[in-house]
Length: 166
Image (cartoon, rainbow, N blue to C red; front, top):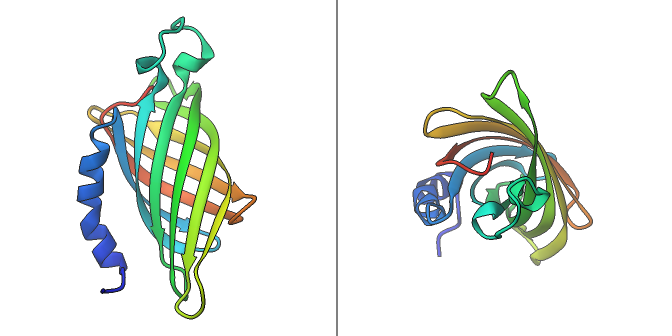
């Protein structure tokens, strides 16, 4: 079996993105983490207003469920992680073109070092970001922290296709 390289993972992103299109929105992104260096990933989102029949003004109808898959390449080995989070829009920035958001959820990461045994870590993730809504897509920037398992701080830059809850 060939090792996963950044080029191989980048070529697989369209397949993962196609799967994510089954959701309300999908995103692809690059990130740089304090522990895992460079990484790429995909995220699918589902506005909870599509799932629950709640009062449109209620908090739960404003939330967005986001699941993501990340692949990173630290100095020695590879890093794979999955996240499941609830995102909450905060307030518009500069009119309606951009919106800030925060979120938290579950983080599961697996380190496969070049030498030694792999390890899996489970913890919490914390997200804060800004999504810039354009016609048909929404670039976003995000700061993401993980704690309780793989303690890390990451900067993320990505593009969401289709429209999420906010």
